[in-house]
Structures are given as structure tokens and as C-alpha cells.
Image (cartoon, rainbow, N blue to C red):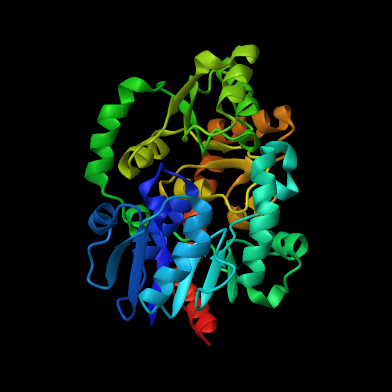
Length: 366
């Protein structure tokens, strides 16, 4: 097969979608040809130089023109058998269209998204889902919500969980150690970690308040947040200031993978109290680096974590403090979560994810 892949997110700021693409691409077998469409083919060629990847430029950035007109033209020009996009795809003209809809969080939780993003998801997401030959999503939770929100049949949706790439399952220990030398002077000696964009649903004000209580208990010294700025950034910073927790927070964005891995490896735990997630890739990243996880018990997070995380109600500050306190102070509990996390990762191997996605491409072609 010749498979077209819209990977333009690889040319933007670090985010979960970009991580998912990187993890998938490094496991795709060379038995097919993959055309990687991006704004900067030279950059993606440096990331994926193998001969089964052909790097092509997307000539127009404007989203609606790019998706509805340019993508069908590229797919047909290059004789793609299948064409894979994220969230929104062309309504006509793209052969073998596969659309990955990671979640419909903006529709299920409208209070956490600007009106424009909600309208875009409601209209463009629904039309894209109906146009697709095949739809993929990352969790059974998201599959149920897509079925209900967009009215598509469940049999048209395949669950292909995010997998971890080899850079996570086989990290470059020397690069991680070098990254820690650079980062260590910038972070508290003992810290908890939260990873994700500055989005209101990530629940970062409560996460900082939990950290403050953990510091009062002399278990940690601060909170490190890793994630790009998003529409929620100003409000989150105002909340930190109003709560008196701003001085506890060290914020990073745009980190390279070894730097993020170094923070995971030295964090006392991942504190991931998001209110809504379609998957939750930081849970797997933490498990890969031997970091215990305290996470929300809502949406897709229990499905992803299984018994390998301490799950709490993200609206219950006292419960979150108690769960984190146990993980931080009891070595037996901590070791048990770390061990269960390593076992859990076998369900999310990159080779398995890649084969599942190839099966979807085959169905789209048929």
C-alpha cells in the first residue's frame, strides 16, 4: 500500500498528538510506502530518514483550504491508497480516508473550551466522521462518546491505543543523565510532576494546592509543570497567584524527550488530576520511566492505567493529598505501583499499535 499521513503537528509545539505520531511512525514496517505530509519536509526527514518514508510539503497552511481542497488533491496526485488525518478530514475526494478522533472532550465538557473550538468540533468533527471510510480513536471511552456525539455506527470505529515509541521503552540513558545535569539547578530538590498543556481541564490550580499540602507534610518542595501554553494559560496563572501557590510552580515548555524523561525519572510521582482525557499518554510515559502515578479516576484514565496508578476523584483535594501522601511516604506502596506500571506497558507496545493501524488502513482500502 501507499499510505498518506498528515503529520503537520510534528512541525509545531510538543503535544500529545505529536507524541502519538512519533511513536506510531517509528514502528510502521517497511513493507509499505508512507508519504508524510508536513509543512517542513526537511525537518520530518531528519526525524524519520528511513527509505519507506517519502516526505512531501503541504503547500497551504490555512486549515479549511488545506483540509478540504489540498488534502484530496495531494492524495490523488500521489496515488495514495489510504489517507490518514487527525480530527478533521476532507468531506469529499480523499481515497481510503481514515480519521483519528482522539476524543470529543470539547463537546462533552464545554465549560473547558472556547466557543469557537466547540463549534468547530461539533460541525467539522461530525462531517469528517461521516466522510471517513474508517475512524480510529484511542480508548473505549472515546469510542462510546464519538458514537453518541456524532451518531456513527460503533463498527466503523476501531480503538487503536496510543503506543510508546522505542525512545521511551529503550531510553538513551546517557542523554537523560546529561539532560538532568542541565535541569537539576532549575527545579526543586523534591518535586511532583504534571505534564500537559495549560488547559483548564488539566486541573492545575488544584494540583498546585495539593502540592502545597504535600510540602507542609515535608514530602516535597514544589511542583514542576511541563506543557505548552494554551488558551487556559492566563487563567491558570491567575489561579496560582490567587491561591498563593505560584511560588511552588516551575513551568517548562518545548522540552526535548530526554529532558522530559529526566524530569519523570527524578519526580517523586506524576500528579495527573485532569478532569477529562481521551487517553492520557503521560501515564504511560511515567510508567516507562519508573515513576509512580497518582491520577484522576474520570473519563479514559482508569482504562489506561488499570491497577498501575492510584486513582482519585479530581474534585476532592483531600483525597488527592491522601493518595499522594501514601505513594510518597510508603516505599512498599510506591514500589508496587512502579512494578505494576512496567507490566502495564506491555499492553501499549509500539509494534502492536502499528499493526492495529495497518489493519485499519487495509479495511479503508477495501
